[in-house]
Length: 86
Ligand SMILES: [Zn+2]
Image 1 (spheres, protein in one colour):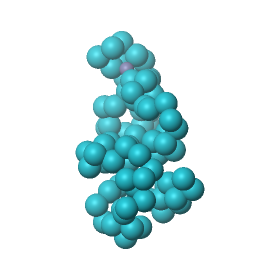
Image 2 (cartoon, protein in one colour):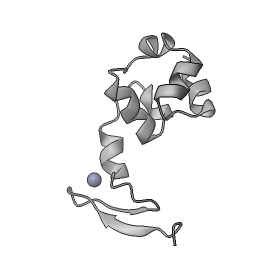
Image 3 (cartoon, rainbow, N blue to C red):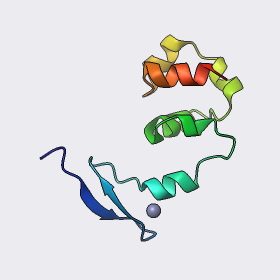
Image 4 (cartoon, rainbow, N blue to C red):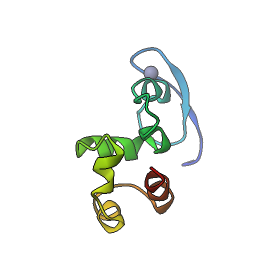
């Protein structure tokens, strides 16, 4: 069943339930988020996509158009609107 959650334990012994095959631990993810609240609006995959492109500030995001975002990232329209509030 694709929707069944399973109990996982990450390399740092956090226990969490995940629905997908994504091995990312949400506790570790939360700890590595920046404190300015910028990337906290986004899902973890979207954060990683931004980080992979060395985008970590709203100014850097503002250089992209919506079309570029949708083309090269995993952001959806809702997340993009969140970013544009900055
Ligand atoms: Zn963890």
